[in-house]
Length: 226
Image (cartoon, rainbow, N blue to C red):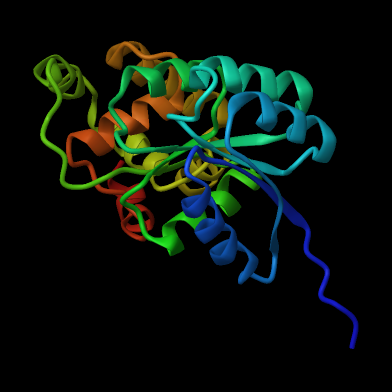
């Protein structure tokens, strides 16, 4: 029997070699994932991204040699099809906000489980949003402003936000609720404006930060009352 074909190349970029090697062992144990390279500084990760064109880059937000937004932008320029999943010790840092604005597709807290990490990699490779927030976390300064903004969301917008936090796409929400895609996009744009953010990922991070658990399988039951 020949070697099993792997079709999701993942590039690891972490400033701690031992940690990166441990992640590589976890990912290589999955039948559909393979590690195509490891980088321990910003310059090297851009070089490897250009050389291997990975499906997903797992990028440490504390990677030496550059801030995450600059590194992410350089990777996107070198390999436009690569999806970037941030690995962070704190999902509320200013560095993450800057990097998501630069085009990251997801965030995974270092405190997450290996299964959550693997699922997040598959999710962003599939073009979906992925957030694994560290819990519990003390509320960051200024959280009262975020809470007030969350309170301005309508019931429909809150449900849409919960579905986005569960990894649902706008198209799936439209199909489940029998709405037009334009209507769902309108709800998404409205909640982004109310929360004062520019991306769905930033909105989902706020939801996680304030205890909004993913709705998961409850979504199908909620759609009738939406």
